[in-house]
Image (cartoon, rainbow, N blue to C red; front, top):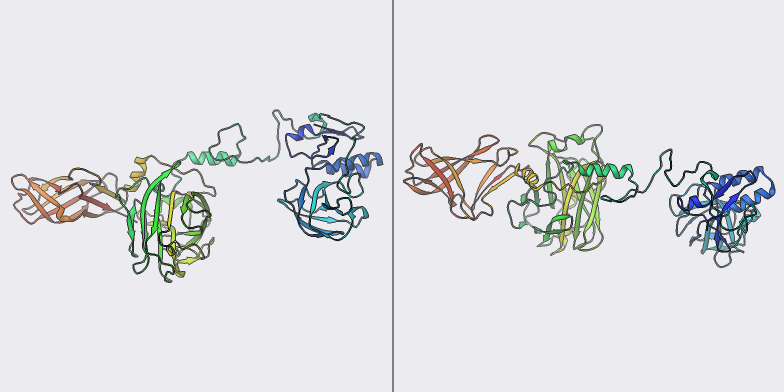
Length: 569
């Protein structure tokens, strides 16, 4: 039910508008409510000083209109002076307004009325109770309070817990205010707002009639842009070499495209594998502890990382006067709960920013977002073929590899001091998906590039020939001598640098074939990175008999044979 107040100068204040705009101020009145905006307190104070006693009483009564009361369990001694309390629920009060604290056991006997000193931002508020007699009732220390907005001490309805307005300007019942009754009020239909109005920001992907803030719009635009994610294969879709990988040494291994891992040879092992994801993420990449390492040595570390090539972070300006912040986001889950850690590090491994993130529930997907300020110090390469930045996830580390979280340090760290040591628990699992690093202080939706584009990014560093084929590999070339032939291996995309070639399982699983001679088992194979488009493969056949200038082809002995080209950072 709407109500209004008419003051002697003709101003009418109606609650109908504000019921739909702000939280209502209410006062019980025979089943009806009288609602006023908080700003009325200032006008009431003006009337108290300038108009007749009758008008002042009406204004004070209007000021006493309150929001629904809340409570407080803060022990307070009844009396004048400063009182700080924590409310069960925040009241929308401003500095200068008054609060009534009444003892729940004896509200009309034990109470205090104090003025709010600073506009509270939460449930904590400080008031000052004046020495005025009407501001204090009763004595002793109480810890069960009813808290509500009040008018100053001495005004009608300001003391006790049951005061109220029975009529306003001679009127009772439902009264509807018009916009023009309140100076500066905007209409509900097509309001013309001024200044810098704010509103709640909708969740990403919201598609309703809810207002869109500038923060929502910026995030939506950013989410539509490509090239935001500085990582490749952050959702682990690309896996050119299938299978799991056991990590049991400090030598880095490559369990899946663009990701590396290392551990300790003398203690602790873990296995890395890819598993199915769910809605919104393709796969999980999982570490499973084999042999536990409850107390890693000071220099021992277990970690998974991706190295980012210099040009891909050049715009961040790290190492310069005004570096940009970056935001890391991902989905994580683990059989172990607690505070985990990782690190952002430069290619020279002498500038590190340890960060932490929490997994509060076991085996439950947790969305993580960590904003990292840019580093104005150190050397950060932007050169093609050089490491520009490392993203590290720490599974466990000795003291030498751990540092204070949340700050840049001139050190080589892998994680944060005091974080979870996953390696301490045999059989423990830890999984991640949708890993993204982007410029700015807000995480946007994961950038799921087309598979062909993601594969091309990975093939700059790894190309595999023969994986998953049911037939043999064929390369075509020409005999150079009786025992050697040269073949061309076309690259799918230009690689970062001249790759290292591996012929798997062994060189002996490949043979040369020449007309009139047939197959000859290879005893040696070398490669030359001719240019960005191809690799020259030179094969030696100890059987001899080949004729220079004749055509030849290199043949794998089975469908399990592979040629692997790597140009990793």
